[in-house]
Length: 361
Length: 247
Image (cartoon, rainbow over all chains, first blue to last red; front, side, top):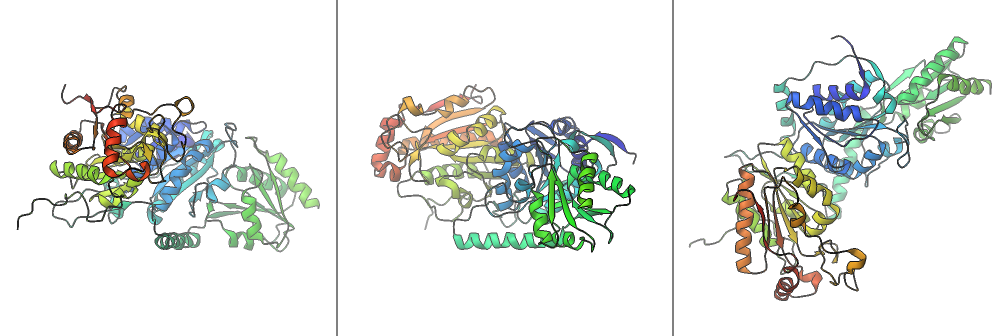
């Protein structure tokens, strides 16, 4: 199929529809508006449900209801709106419901601004909502990857019965790049998708069947029973941590003098800077976590070559993934950080300057 | 031996968890009887709230979802949109529906969302121990209005039926009470009508059931009913506010 030039917000919406998503609930917010608008245009054409909710709180609870019926369902928002969804995300995780949530991050805290930022890493990977739970969190760095993650996210959500978040940013949402889409699922395939969830999801009782009574629920008033439930969730999370690590190695070699770690949009700028110092005969590698939860702690540690003097973390925040990198490096070499905030995106020249300084140290 | 009364098919045999004298059991039974009456047992799905009836998902004998506090109409919207071949109801209390869930109920009603909402109003937060509700009456004492509800400070009780009656889309809105056998029979008719309209795909149907809370009101069950008749019914007047099916 030919490549199409498209904004990330529209590409991920198209990819979600092709992956069999026929239910979408959301509330408008910049810089993800093209996503909700694309869904408003396209869902009726595939006999899908598009509903503009009265709030992000309502939207995520509509997702809860639809996911409880075992159907592929998605919502999207940007940072302040994702904060509102956190209540529902905790319930979705507790009730083990599959769904996809897209966060096109903007500057914060508070109302912040509408420029690209990576300030929601903690919120996405360390909780955000209440209680012991984990989200699978995927962080794209190109429009193509953003689109590809839609189908991967639905597959992971269905496989693990867990919400999956795609943690993009305003840059990826607004930027146009060529993108190639997968063949859409057929109507017949989509109609049967919920059957994988038949053992637990809301559905009619067929006459003559043994009557089922399925409960979509995160309440367990008996502490011993809740302990069992949370431990069961943690067993699931351990399997995800083992199976779903995803990261990119860029220019990793034994010659590396610096190992950079960056994710999403930030990693693209870092790659440009690495190429520039490479032209000057200096070797700098990059580990880019693609899934930021689960985080590739061991693989990151293994990527520290014999000549690496420093691990250098670059983020569009004040140092959030930095904590995970420090856990991974475990004091083996010094870890340094530089970031830009407020929706200001660093340039390759700025990163190059930071790398050159570090190479001289 | 002749069976003259039995549990509705739409209720499980899980024992209720309600206080002695509580009317939730009556309200549950009315909803279940209406589901049986209209033959919807195999196609109905329900949403339980947060509050005293939080365990309603265990009591109704069909697939059920437990919603976050106030979010039942949004959850039911997602369920109905995902399963248009089925029918859905929510069962909510006054704290859940008229305070934290105000946006969700108003907008579900405004969309004419295809659901039946059963709203149990006893003017207090029961489960959390008797705090002031949006429906608490003026000067009524609760644990968070220990000197009585002061209307110049926290306003007046919200009349939800009247509020929803300002919207164009709702199909049926009625307020009934559960305070006497005669009232319960009227309530049964209203609940049945809501489920009937739901079955027929008419849109949004809403029944408010005026109830009591003997435990948190500090009154015995019979005195609670007298108190509700004297104090609640003048403010929350029973009656049908909207019935597009009768027009």
